[in-house]
Image (cartoon, rainbow, N blue to C red; front, side):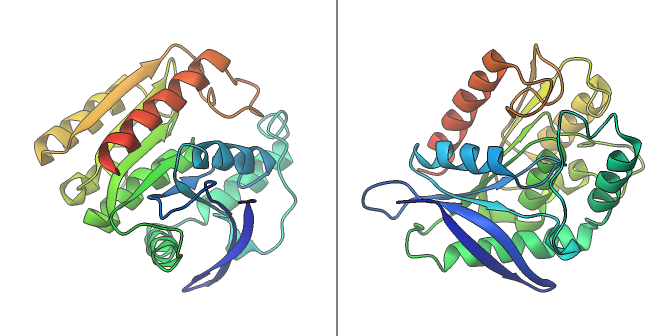
Length: 246
């Protein structure tokens, strides 16, 4: 089936998204794929389609839909151009905990209503900012999320941040996989230890790995893309979802 452009109703409007459906006869488990801070763009349509070929209905939402139409970011230069970095920061900063929770619930409600989607828990995955959103969704949605992944996710266990995902560990019912990056200030060893401890104390089945690659390793249009690390992340995600959603 070709990829579909869909509009997901939310409490604050409608999130333009892409929906990726496997070939053949379903239904299939569903996965929400949260993009990185650069937002939805062609590379995430390609990644959503690749995951769909493994037998999952994949929703890639526009996390910045409240801003209306916005110029896509060029990931090769966004962090070196002060104006573009400021624009990206403003959009990312608009994702309050309440908005993230409302959106996560709306995305799951949308998937529940699709005939291609099997009954049962959904999976979440995300990259950079999307990794934080993925783990937050697993917390606020509880048993509705059966598996949650974060790849080079940032600010996952920040002391003093009331919106930090590690504070939701007690509500998580998912199996969790975190693929961090080497020398990543947004998710350093201290955060990894804090996140792991929070999940262990809550009885969450969690694996935290550190990839021998830089932040951004899994997304092909990032300057730090690393093909070997990216392939490792696909394998890890396949193992996670295959074990928890099937």
